[in-house]
Structures are given as structure tokens and as C-alpha cells.
Amino acid sequence: MEQITVRILDREYKLAVAPDQRERLLEAVAMVDSRMRSIRDAGRVAGLDRIAVMAALQLAHEVLGAAVPGTDSSAGDVIRRIRSVSEGIAAELERQEQLF
Image 1 (tube, one colour):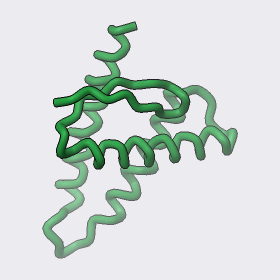
Image 2 (spheres, one colour; image 1 turned 90 degrees about the horizontal axis):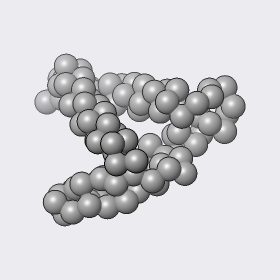
Image 3 (cartoon, helix red, strand yellow; image 1 turned 180 degrees about the vertical axis):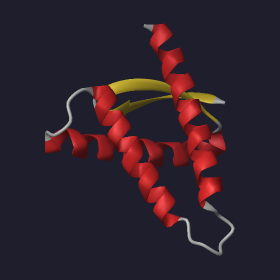
Image 4 (cartoon, one colour; image 1 turned 45 degrees about the vertical axis):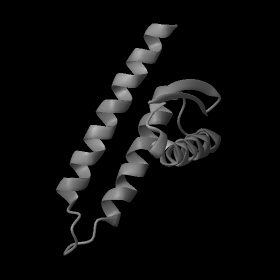
């Protein structure tokens, strides 16, 4: 695992990532940053935590909409993956907060 520093909505986060997953994580960071900026710039949601929740909900909604019946990916599988990623993000954010 390597440690990288990323910026999301003008805040830095240190994340651990396997070398073979680095590019995918950076794509995810760019996607989350872009979505959060879009929500912030629309001016309808205030507060970083609310912006983050709205971005997460929008992205999850898109992922669930991408699950096509009759494929290997069911809505239940997608939901389980989202929960797993969400729990990992929450744990990492909690760990990051302890550093400051």
C-alpha cells in the first residue's frame, strides 16, 4: 500500500491505496470533487457534510440506475458494494480526523 494525498473541495485527504488501484482511486476522487463542486456552486446546499451526502446520494443513484436487469450486476450487489465503499470512506475520514 502507498499513501497519496488528494484534494476534494479544497481539502486535503491522505489515503492508502494499492499501487494497482491508484488510477481508479484518482478517477473516483476527480468524480467526487467535480460533483461536490457542482452542488456547492449551485448554492442550494450549505456545509461540507451536506454537500458530501448529496454528492454520495447522486452518485449512488447513478450507479443503481446503471444496474441492468438480466446482467451479472443486480441492484442488491450494487447496494452492497456502495455500503462497503461508504463504510471504508467513513472509517478513513474518522482516521484522518484523528490526525488533526
